[in-house]
Length: 260
Image 1: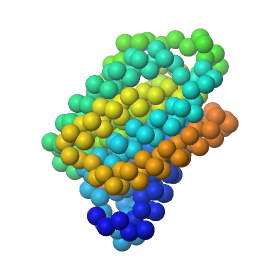
Image 2 (image 1 turned 180 degrees about the vertical axis):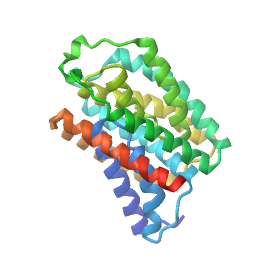
Image 3 (image 1 turned 90 degrees about the horizontal axis):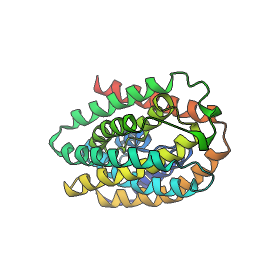
Image 4 (image 1 turned 90 degrees about the vertical axis):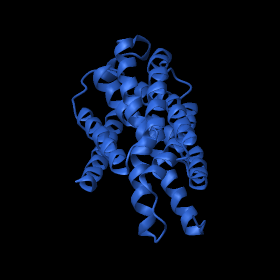
């Protein structure tokens, strides 16, 4: 793949925009960057990535984007360590299984799973979440084993598309586990970081990563993700939830239009 200035700038901007938003609303960024990597390069006359290549690049990029986001949220009591342990280890196992097994799937199959995950996440984000943000951060309780089982299922599906699963984890944590928004954002980034280890390992072991675009995306992620997290801390929680809901819904619509 030719490394022209246009190619480098296009990939960098895709990585920067996706990582800024991921740091702001607590997702790894693949739900944004997956369709951008798939559709934007051809618009500039650049070589198109396959679905396998996009998933591989996304898996590596998410690993580094979440590091930046977690670092920015490390203070203030936003990281729920118990939730990170239970959901983190479950999603790590699931994402490794999904990432490794995706080699056996067709591109249409990968896109179909991505579309299903995005649709489920979009529906969940529009379910009312009354009183969630009134719970003090030091008094948050949840069903630990339910959290682990849901994280395992999310990990398997998300590992297949290299998305790390944060776009599904966030609505699960808000709607099912009743975790306050800012704690959800910070904690989901930490869980997504753990998930991305399994997903990235599966993609690397099966030769699905295009290294140069992945490196460009990583550099963009390390710059943009902490900036997005800093902006997210200052925003109203309702605005953050609306942004995520609209983003997931728009992506789900786009993917399904292409599948159908």
